[in-house]
Amino acid sequence: MGFLAGKRALIVGVATDRSIAWGIAQAMQREGAELAFSYANDRLKERVEPLAASVGSRLTMPLDVTSDEQIDAAFAQLQREWGHLDALVHAVAYAPREALTGGFVDSTSREASRIAHDVSSYSLTALARASRPLMQDRAGALLTLTYLGAIRSIPNYNVMGLAKASLEANVRFLAADLGPLGIRVNGISAGPVKTLAAAGITGFRRMLNRVAEVAPLRRNVTLENVGNAAAFLCSDLAAGITGEILYVDSGFSTVGMSFPAEAED
Ligand code: NAP
Image 1: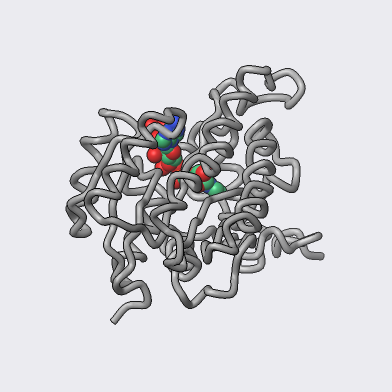
Image 2: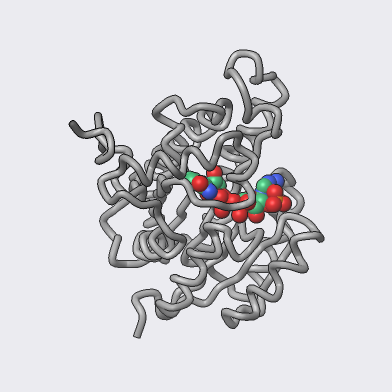
């Protein structure tokens, strides 16, 4: 029996079979969770429904996280179909493409900043509020995805770094507020993974190469690496962990200096 047997989870953020949310869904399904999936728009519905079916999920729903009406409708559907929720995975981020290239000062407009924070950080608060009545007294778990750009400057990541810093603060404030109800809130700071969202960041390939060159494990993380850590954090095995950011990044964030082999003298 898997360590998520009997748990019901909503996965928000599957776009393709390379999405981090899909890696998480596969690990959670393997460990026995029953899954529901949301899709951001009709274009993604056609991609998400077959993926959901492949892991035995019958429950899919539209959910643009910038729409309070769609959030209300999605959670009303969960209430009707399941009556409760044990875990929610928030794997959603967006900033206008022009904000993810070039110098930070020139590419960070007020509008790009508003959009990035709304989609990538505020949405976690909104989904936590909607989850609360379904998770109360059930040892519920909320999990989000963040990146090193929250705490270090990264070329071209720009306003998304600010949004991720906000998201990580969001994890701590939500953990404090919802902890007394038995609901845990955590984040995974994943190393770079080649996905649709990542393709929007100028120079993303160089980020992958850099990690493979200097991270202690000398390789990039896989969807399975992130998925397994996420399944653990959403399970009762992590019952004592909340308000935490867990790095799943081949150790890259821990390195102060590294001399790649070819540069050794
Ligand atoms: P992805 O496959 O492109 O997933 C991003 C998802 O966010 C997509 O399903 C996207 O839908 C969705 N989304 C965007 N705006 C939305 C909205 N308004 N409402 C609902 N959904 C919306 O990329 P990913 O890399 O797996 O990203 C998942 C999470 O991991 C993000 O928070 C990302 O920042 C984080 N992360 C990624 C990496 C990496 O290197 N890939 C590293 C660390 C953290 P659309 O396709 O329709 O926009």
